[in-house]
Length: 373
Image 1: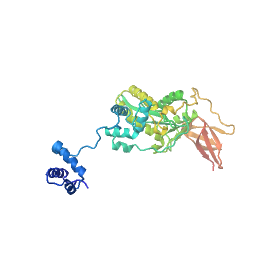
Image 2: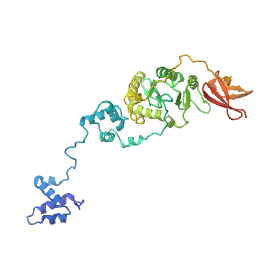
Image 3: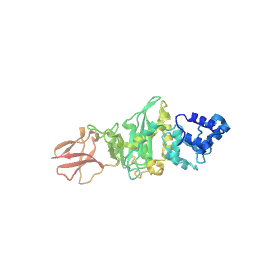
Image 4: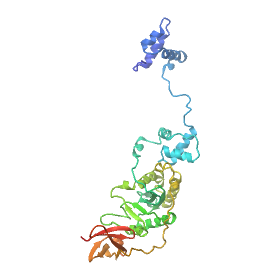
């Protein structure tokens, strides 16, 4: 049993006052105050040495903390966090290891330091929930492409176009675009294809210029990709989480670089994007990559970009038709609509396992189905 909580200080003053009386039995006095002899002597000695000040509670923090983080290391952690505001304890620890630092604290200790120094708020921590998503088996099996939300710059608005490899999270492109037109995207993608080769498929949402809805299932842009032999995959309408990796990439990008681009000229935005892309690919450890950086997991594609498109070839067993105005295909004396984006292109009609049903292919991608029943 210890000091009564209500008037602790007044009880201690009364105790030492009584304890100084010559006729008092010290053991009995301690019993009546509900404390041990050890505690009684502790406060009596403090009172004799320091007066009333000695009766106040003292900090239980040790004078020496042999396991405390070195101040230089703590400052290094804070500097690295300030440079990469979206990085947590595990990423910071791995980056410090890559930098050759020794005696690095654990990720949990780094997190405590960040929280203590005001680098992490409880509200912000709640936003960072893990995504549950698929992953392509090899680099270049699938790329994710999207426009990040535009923001104001000195002479208009910047529309960042991003392309990342699904398997390695490698950022292949961060382009500061002045618009979201097909010609702009094709130009940047052509540069990417020339440097990294071509993927087997590209995942994109249903917006411009790769729109896909009930009226516009394909666009001239997606026809261009299919013509290159790239499988076009669209996310489910109103389900941006399908592009989870690119969405997460945008969140990191917004925290670390976009805010510094506001009201700057478009050229300066691109320079900042280029510098940050190098850091993202070569310095930032990724949890889903076992804390490796994306550059360690990416390889350029063996599929070279053709400067001039080869002729479209179909099997001798295919029935080939040319798409007319309005996306109309004539087959068996009947008209069927595919998509007006394929106007003037040659498509192949192939039978399925169901009687009266035929698949319509453009290059290697099925674009429609014909039902004669």
